[in-house]
Amino acid sequence: MYTFNAEKVKNDCVQWIREFFEKNGKGCSAVVGISGGKDSSIVAALCVEALGKERVIGVLMPCGEQADIDMAKLLVKTLDIRHYIINIKGAVDGVIDSMPFALSEQSRVNLPSRIRMATLYAVSQSHNGRVANTCNLSEDWVGYSTRYGDSVGDFSPCSNLTVQEMKQIGRLLGLPGELVDKVPTDGLCGKTDEDNLGFTYAELDRYIREGVIENEEHRELIDHKHRMNLFKLELMPAFKPDLD
Image 1 (cartoon, rainbow, N blue to C red):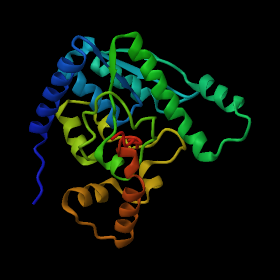
Image 2: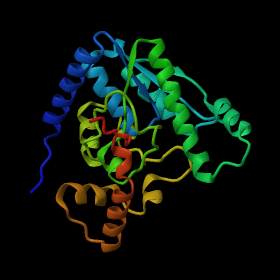
Image 3: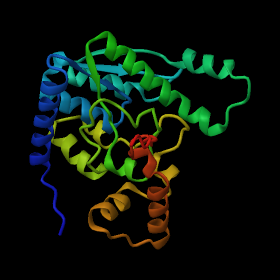
Image 4: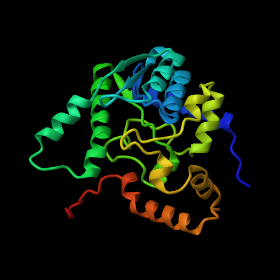
C-alpha cells in the first residue's frame, strides 16, 4: 500500500532547494508568484525554511480586482517576507487592445498567466533572483497549467508532489488552514479547478499514486488529458541536422 512520509519529503525538499541555490545562484533570492492558493503558499514557505525569509520575495499580481487577494496578503504577512504588488491589468489590456484581431476565449484566459510569468522574471532579474515554479504533480499530470505561464520557472520544488501530499507538507510548515485547504481556482475564469477538470483531486491523486479509480468515465478523462498534455512537460522539439 502506498504511504507518504510528509516530514521526510519536506526535509528533503528543503535540502534540495538549498543545494539548487548553492549550485545555481549562491546568494540569490527565490522569487515566488503569490496567488493566495496552497501551491504558491507552500512553495514560498519551503523557500523560507531553506533560505531564510530575507532571501524570499513574494510577488502579488492581481489583474484588476482580485477577490481573494487577502489570502495572498495573509501569506506574505505570515512568512514575513518582502513582497511587491504589481497589477497586470494594464499590460493585459494593452496586449488585447493592440491585437489586430479578436483573441480566442482560451487566449484571453491564458494571457494573464503568461504576463505574470514575464513580470516575475522582470522582478527576478532586477533582484538577483531565481523564479520558483509552483505547479504540482496533479495539475501537471492533466495539463492544468499554462504553457510559458505558470508551467515554467528556474526551479520546481513541488512538481513531483500531488495535491494531497502538498497539503500534508503545508500543515507541517505551519501555514494557516485557510491557505492549505482553500478551494483551488485558476484565478482566471472564475471556476474551481475541479469544476474545470471534471473530477476531484482526491480521485486524481489516488489514480496517480495507486492506479485506482472507481469512476470509469473519470479514468478515461484523466488518461485523455494526460496524453494530450504531455507536450507541456517536454523540452521544445529541436531539429538536429545530420552533419556527417
